[in-house]
Length: 427
Image 1 (cartoon, rainbow, N blue to C red):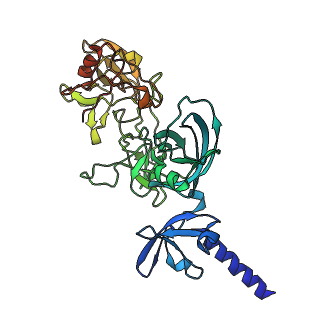
Image 2: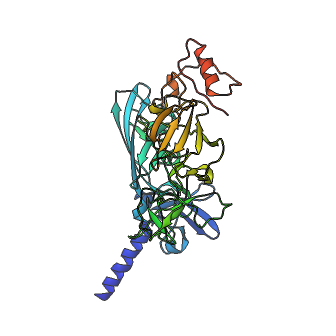
Image 3: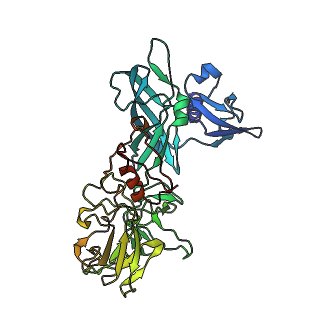
């Protein structure tokens, strides 16, 4: 009876090992990379572990039982890290349309990696609106279980057996489907853990922070960091941190044991912060609009309420220091800023709020938050449209060179009767 239990235990352990295909193996100094994993591999290739590998010359190779654990260089990810993604796509094959659903597993750990073959199912579809042709790139968005938005793309590569539905090759999907984290929000983009969201409150070496900090870094470093995971007391967990993207704000922190709560308690060491790189989603109608970043600078003489400007983030106490903001090519998006190209800010009298003036000194707003300072992505007379537009729907009118800004590009377009929209690039 004991022998039977031992045998079952060993066999079960072996099965667990075999079910987890390695990303990479090595044999006699040669490297092999995982090509696919499925139950048919046993019969098709004689792979005892259901894992099919390829060498540097793309030749198929299978490993046999007995050497699996020792040869595994990069093991499979923990099952808790694997996420599920889904998208659907309408494709056109001649005069026939198909609606295809894609299910796929992936891991987001520093980079996006597909973890297995996708599951694809296509059915005939008569609606061609938004359909993609063979090799025409499709873009879509997904959100991870941790709330990260991913911008994804895939190129439809399919075959069509006569008299049947189209079929997507798993290898083609695996090679053309990719995702990147959307750059529109504050995330870590390097360090120990990335990409990840910052904890809204974390403690480190006796100080409490509510945004990214430079604590512990040299003045020459020029980066900020934040905690990506904390314990029940908000303390940073070892190794759970990352460097912050330009969308993140700065916080100097305050002592953990500081209990004074007055009208001017400063948990981050300032009363106002001008961070033009942060997400400007405070204005009405700004959600999902890719607002542009204004330039910022101190205006006139430096006053006593100016603190410092690490990474270009201007920190102020309440006072008379003036900050000048300018949209280089367009205008401010917020309705209260009257479509101006330049505005002037003063911190206070309320914390985390600005008085905003125009060039004549007229008050535009008495308590504006710093997330309402984004620039319109479109010039005058043009409106942003959410989504992707197929190039097949566009007509080419002409190209204008030596165009130094958006205004000149718009002027070129307005001079052509058939020009309804334009694309501007500084490259």
